[in-house]
Structures are given as C-alpha cells and as structure tokens.
Length: 122
Image 1 (cartoon, helix red, strand yellow):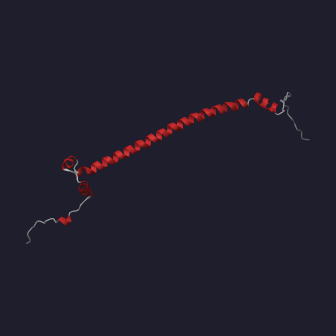
Image 2 (cartoon, one colour):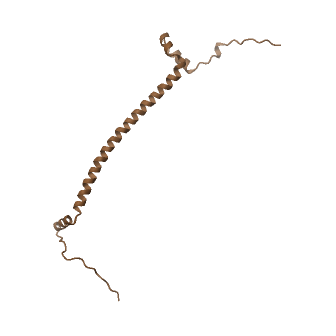
Image 3 (cartoon, one colour):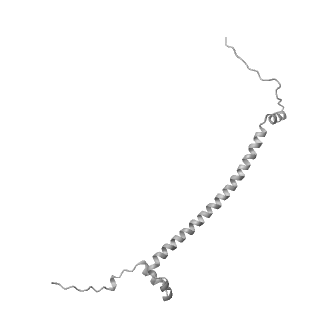
C-alpha cells in the first residue's frame, strides 16, 4: 500500500491577481499598509465607484434643474406675450375698430339693415 506524502507547493504555481499586482506597484510603506490592507481594496474601489456615480448624478440633476428653471422663465415670458397679443387681437376685432379701419380704406358702414333674398321656383 502507498503511503501518504505532503505535496510541496512550488513557487511557479502561485497565481498573481489584480490586487497583488496593485500592492506590488504601489509599494506602500508599512504605516499605510497597516491602515489600508490590500484585502480591503475591492471594498474601497466599490465605495469610490459609488461616490463617483453619486457625484455625477448630482451634477446631472443640478444641470437639469437649472435648465428647467430657465425654461419656466421663458414660458412665463411667452405666456405674458400671448396674453398681450390676444387682448390686442380682441380689441382690434371689435366692430367699432373694424369700422374705423374700413373708413380709412373708403368703405362705409351700411345704415340699412340686411334683408333676406327669397328665390321662388316656378
């Protein structure tokens, strides 16, 4: 029967991941390495990504709020213009105003009331 033996791990089988590469590239001194351990880097990157997304969303929302405020001002101005033009149109379409404009063209208002024309078929 065979005997159990321990397998000695070789240094060539060691896989290096992204965070071990980051640890090697940053070459943190021992004081920083004690505070921020490499095993916390995924959480730190995740929180950093959430913060960047939050800041971007905040800027986007503020930009939209400024745009909405500007559009509300424009709508208020256009509403005032519409009201003014509508009042001017109603005033100019009154019968007395139409008669004044027709008089300037040489047309006079008829004093005779209208009458109905009846056509009889035989």
